[in-house]
Length: 255
Ligand SMILES: [Zn+2]
Ligand SMILES: [Zn+2]
Image 1: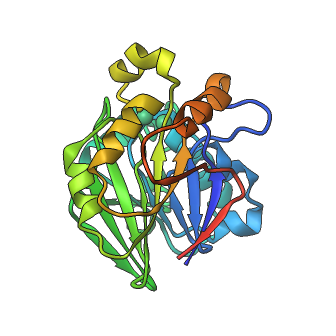
Image 2: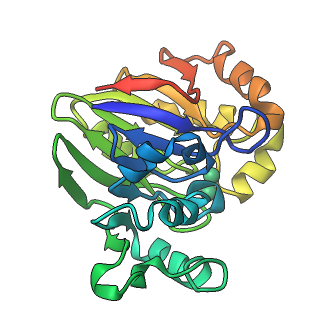
């Protein structure tokens, strides 16, 4: 399995793309602005989109992706998400006002957009990979994902605050190789981070006390204004033995 980082920033601006990961050639985890760097031939290959939650930085390119490939595909794009997330998309995005309802285009029986509900604990088995929805804790309903190739797993936290069920799920993964986890805000923004249910370095380092595996930890979703400060705070004498590094757009994780 090859997981390519298309975007992993908590904002936009030169060089920054919001959250999206491409698994092999045909599956996206979230559909933030990083998707916009893919060429048309790559966009047409996307068969599945797994969404962590409905926030704009994670779905921004989904409507534009569908519009771009409409007419060039003979099978649907399946969007996997919780019922709550799907309802937000239906009500607020694909409502014929913000964007056309691609779940009825060209008609309901042959629609380009197909929704597939998955809730925490569910798994989707696809060729070469099993994807499991794990608990997360955010201001809106959200999940994390485990991508399991059979020999190794990568966990992507999505947007989350500290969440004991998340750590319990992660600790139960025997073949865990890499944990991609967010740290959106620097320590001086802790009030905002708590209110918006994101991690700060201090709170992530404390939460890592619950992690029982020695795994590679990659940090994502850093707010551009404080990205250097966030990494400095994470890498200071942090009292943990984990290998922590920053995720970058363009990185490829094989597992
Ligand atoms: Zn969010
Ligand atoms: Zn986000």
